[in-house]
Length: 153
Image (cartoon, rainbow, N blue to C red; front, side, top):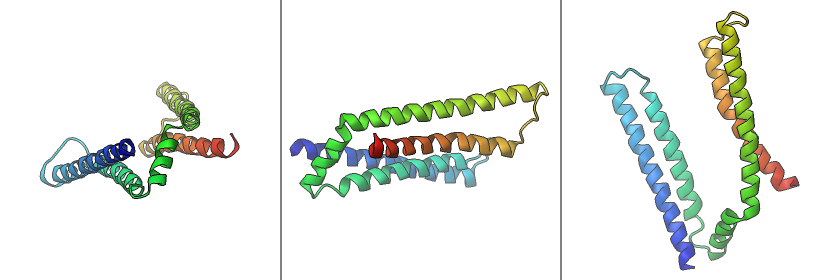
């Protein structure tokens, strides 16, 4: 049980570290945005701060909730180290990678043909939405693959 609690404490500390990093990045983004003139959009730094804070908060909540229940601790650790779960995540990651690769390749080909005049040049807004989809769609494929494999695999 000591090893399990040590594992939980390390994960909670890592979560607090991510949360602190997120707070620092968020504050730095606000300071850059309001006090300095920078050649890039300072909200990017704040957005990274929100992202890391969210990761840290999720990790802290996940592991702190199980600390008082020994069975939940053992179940959580066994689930994280289960070979079947690793295989499912690996397969889902592979599917998401190929979807991401195909979407990125399609964008590169479109831009290549657009530069020669064969296709219309995409607008900056259209390109932004496509790139956002190139991030979101592979995540949906990853999550859907995990759910599908856990239910039917």
